[in-house]
Length: 382
Image 1 (tube, rainbow, N blue to C red):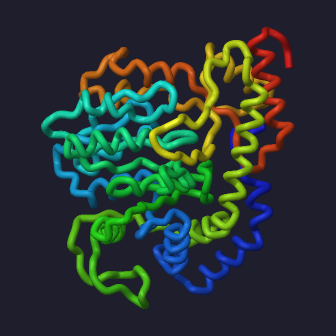
Image 2 (cartoon, rainbow, N blue to C red; image 1 turned 90 degrees about the vertical axis):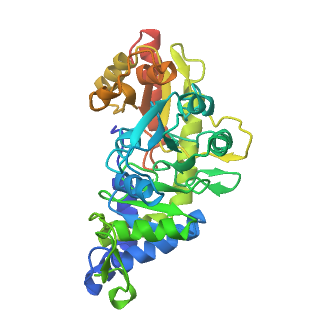
Image 3 (tube, rainbow, N blue to C red; image 1 turned 30 degrees about the vertical axis):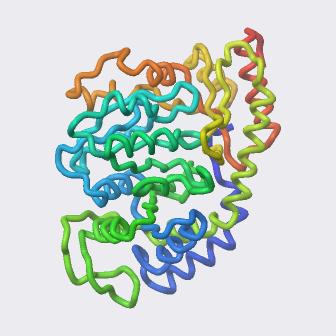
């Protein structure tokens, strides 16, 4: 079975999707048009954000959010050593310098105490990433940010549907982002992303930056060719075709989230007590009410790479999240980090393995994956 597919979901949604796409074609505006506005409004209603700004990708969303929040050249941004590369690489084109900190060993989120330990006189921002199935410790991180005078922005690219005390992830600080990469909980058929924020100035600046820095009146009351270029921006407009796909899928998002939770529970029952499985995912008790969402199902195992090969030999696709910690990536060699600097992040990189988890997956498929893992750990054959 593949690590991810949405063929059945897309087949079911094709009549609704087709209607949205026909609307785009008949309107004649294929990028940055009315369908994008419609999606932004629907996402604002879903997340509770005062403002949603659609862009070309989740990575662009991070870059533009940091710029809109006032990141100045040379400002430091504390980011986790364990995350997707964009959590750190986005800081550089925004003009800043990433500073790595370790993660909590159980939740994979940025450790508030580690943030306090690495923050220095040039540190201006802290940017946790909400990974896999739950938000980082936002209570602790907000307390550190207030104490040190830092702006908190959230890499909530994986976190649609996640909430902290009823507030959607991405809206606890100055703003957050969403990624609609096809494998995400709400995925497009290509790249797309969004910035979410309750700050009107941040939203206005991101809206300008995504369209070459243009402010001012627009054509036909939707984003077109604005009259004033007030900032040096980029071309990060969202395609209306991707917005059409996302609008069709947004209507079943909560059902998909429930299905993901059911499959995760099936995995938990099938893998509990299996030798060599060091850790199964769970939503950690926090100082706040947390609603988790299973974007991927990540376990920690001994002999991770051997297990991945064993699963592949039995037709089961997996992904490694993430094989190299960010502080040891070659592109950040100039920061001078060495193995052992962030032990929790490095341990996670050695042990974590993501198993198939998506609404099209059948319960029998989950049972099959569990059987193959059990056969590897016990030395038998599935």
